[in-house]
Image 1 (cartoon, rainbow, N blue to C red):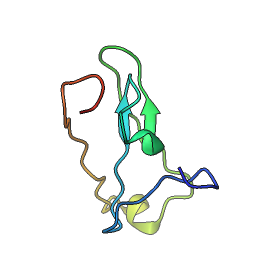
Image 2: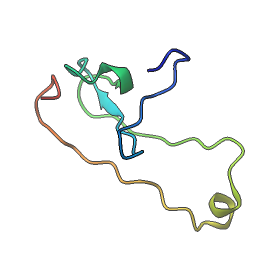
Image 3: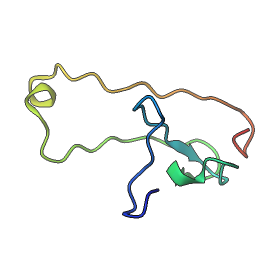
Length: 72
């Protein structure tokens, strides 16, 4: 997170968020702690744009990048 508590973007402008139980080594700035085992991921949208309301917004994909609990 930056000085204001905002997540840090990658140099290309994209954003990686690490959702996992253990703090990822070297990537803790964008870490969201998750429970041990399976969990459900929910996306809440406050004041959604017209694309969201019309149903044309595409939610960015989520993918598993490692089976290692430490994220490396």
